[in-house]
Amino acid sequence: MVIEYVGQSIRQEIADMRERRYEQEGIGSSYLFRVDQDTIIDATKCGNLARFINHSCNPNCYAKVITVEAKKKIVIYSRQQIGINEEITYDYKFPIEDEKIPCLCGAENCRGTLN
Image (cartoon, rainbow, N blue to C red; front, side):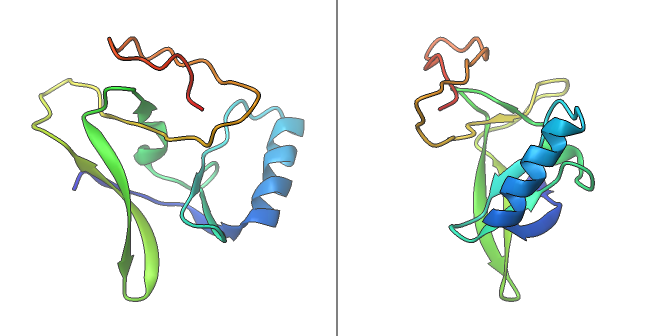
């Protein structure tokens, strides 16, 4: 285990509303991580360092939803030994959409987009 992705647990409707509000407020990035069909963790204003972990098409970590005392949590686990000063990354696995988000990870097997 590397770190838990923490923030406020919210419903999809609230996440949509917050995403629009963050854009209106000029917040450059929102940190919304889907737990399941009904729940999203919003780490935009009250998260921890996990929200700054970058995407890679060749990651050294992976995200997993686990249940602890009947509550779902997102935890980042390492796939391998991670060296000092090595960047921690995982595959965001964004859903496929028409509007593509370019990937700049630089991995040899880069898909070219995050979604």
